[in-house]
Image 1: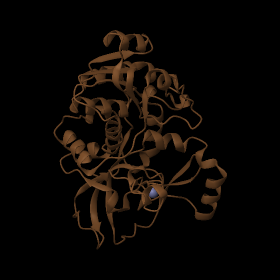
Image 2 (image 1 turned 90 degrees about the vertical axis):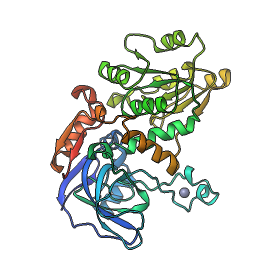
Image 3 (image 1 turned 90 degrees about the horizontal axis):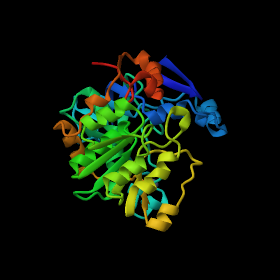
Image 4 (image 1 turned 45 degrees about the vertical axis):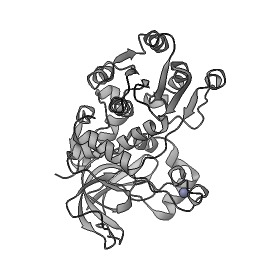
Length: 361
Ligand SMILES: [Zn+2]
């Protein structure tokens, strides 16, 4: 079968590899649709895999079946110990797996395990025609299209931001960044009962789509100071919850730490800022909003099975829409590099979500 293997920093090849081996606790999925996440694409083109540790690893272990954690797969074989799935179920990666061994896990804080096993990183991902996956990672989504299922994993990440924020009905919300995370977060906030959602971005197509998907007030930060606009909209008070979904490396068009700084000004005293973006490792945060206004900064954790099922239900019933976020769909496993190029330069290609690749139908 065909699979993309990573040979080192910025080097990926489409190889003929053996069909995966079924394990007792695993299933084999036929990959239907896959999308290379923004995070994966950024990491592949960064110096991450050029570090001494990774160079040695590639030398000792050879090329790896990396990336491809956002996929829809159809189960074609089931391991003997797997009880919750059947042949032909459609699945995606929805559940992180705590290591069970670290101090957090041993103390009963598995949701905060820092050694979570990740599909496409610690275990093979789905830039392949078939993949063997531990069933504990997987979640069924029977009433969605393959394209929707492939895009469900980011919803689990967006949802973990809402869980972390402890949202209440009637909360006022600002979402910085109306990319995939921001647009999903905004839709989830609407479904969770937010009263007013203010969306901030610098791309007109994202702002337009945000408005169509339920964002009440859209602010183009290229034209207007977003903090002034947020203060005007809230009687100079600020909002209950800010989701910062725009930060990250400016080399790939993200906002750096600018929106992280603005988030503290957008929340009212005692309000919450959830950092949903992945700031660069050396990013610095001014803590004045914390010390002067008691702003609570929060990260993202993981979510329960019930919360995950709620999110899938919202997609199945059309309350959270994924299709408008999927702007580019390519046919055939050989198109993965093209999909990465589009995903890394979404502005240039007028893309909203990552480009999808249909591996099989
Ligand atoms: Zn652990």
